[in-house]
Image: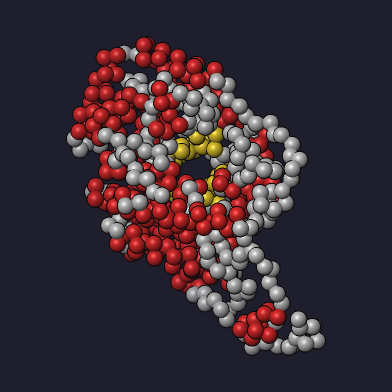
Length: 555
């Protein structure tokens, strides 16, 4: 090894530094020096090794290509929305959790639905047995949605709903609740996920084949464009793609390609791109590979701006903006030593903030074991508040911008994304690629590679494959009372018995006829919601017309 006396006083560039000094110092053996996506990381980045075109690649915040942020003042003007995901048991219980979060400083509501609601079954359906209220709130009807938002003025809050194949029905319930409160649908603010393509790719919660599902999504985009101008009708989601096992490159590329597909469907419907594009939003995962995550968000903004302007001809600068919500990675949480998850979540949240997110959910440390307790949720929210008010990272915009390493990662992720775009287009687009299992195979391969690296201890997971602890304290976890399921079943049965049956049947028949034709179904779904038709009844009618989708398994 070279001593201090042996080292040259001046070096002619990074290559000489590496040859004379770095290679004389042994690296740690056994661990990988690459990102989770497999991008090799050099030991040092300098102006010699990274070319940064500031005008082309960086620019200024609030200015095309928006690499450095979508708003000129970013967090100096307004902090991101702190939007904690909540939902469990009955609508009444979740309403209490919403109020608790608002009292502790949350600035937006985010709703988790249970599996029957996500899959279009009422709580008394045989397939719902054991799942009612387990991983989110049970919503069968307009009555449940009214209870969920009881005492919460919908004209004053921004609401996010994480629901996809049944999103049109959930949105219809929400519109009816608001109008019953005296709030016009044109004044409602919020986001509903609606991203059905990522369901086929990753999360696997669908009902119909892709084509009628895409029709429903486009119906919602058209409906919101015309009647709900403040509402985001789709949150194009990479989060679940990442949770399914993809890497950052795949999350970036597949999410953006899904977004382009929705844009193309709306244009084909006859909508002008600048009429709907400003209300599209995105949802990304914040994983643990800190700098790769920051670079991912920056590359996403730049790609979206370029494609919207150059490929789709958007003229309104608001159509070029990629606004996104971020949630810390559930898949990174461990059941072993769960308190360590607090550290993981804080670092992931910090990467989202440094990457310029517009809203953020921080996972609770106990979520690898169960739905979070109130104390764990409060601590997760406090994590965001500490980042916002105590760390100083919000004092300047894009503080990592200009870092040779971050700029290099941003450029490389962009190149990798465009390579995937070309491969997907060569298959005919997203829907044909889904049918050929392209995405599913790519994610499975990435997941296998990552797990192999963990098992070989090339990637260290604290408490799992190194620094294990045999003596762990048992956590108090949230448990859902099984009696709640029976209460919800009785509630939906009572609703059916007490409603105007003729009005409900007529609304359901109109919805079915509409599905057989080509009209926009959203007005018919709103009418059915007001007639107290349940979610399961509407979905059964649509399943009867369109059938159900069966995926070919990937091994």
